Length: 199
Ligand SMILES: *[C@@H]1O[C@H](CO)[C@@H](O)[C@H](O)[C@H]1NC(C)=O
Image 1 (cartoon, rainbow, N blue to C red):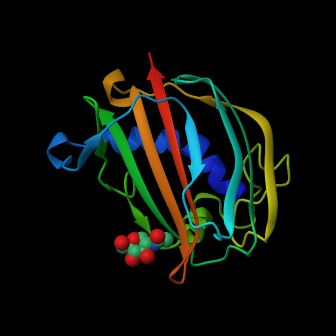
Image 2: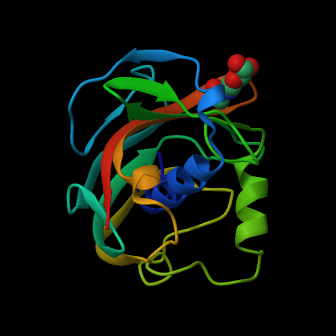
């Protein structure tokens, strides 16, 4: 996966997790599987010949603190250009009482299918506007198309702001899987596990 998605995993994910949890009622939590204890971890989960792969991803501290500083670095590559329409299927799970519970999709957050991530990026960062830091500094792209090649984000610092949410909503262990595809072909798959601690 390229860097824009790496960033999504490292930073946007935390926000997505939180928003998803706000919108998540226990009555809609149905699918459960046995959970294991874990900290931050990641892996590519696609076919060996998937064109988009992540090569490294480092995030600290572990658990991630909210509010607090976050340091992340990442590298990845794609052997094909990633262009619209770029479908993304996200599966988000939270550990609840020792089991992994799938967080349903609600208002575009949680375990959702996105038909075109390029479209979403264009809405978040209108064409013509500079890419947000630290992408801009390192000359990394933030909109489609993403050219074939290698991308890397050197160690960068972020700040995760205080959010007015009950701690039990954000505290805990999460797993997220993202599958990237275009025109029926899988391009890449990434799984990330992380723990969040909020005060
Ligand atoms: C996303 O899920 C839908 C429904 O299961 C499937 O048709 C589609 O191929 C999936 N897309 C990707 C990129 O995995």
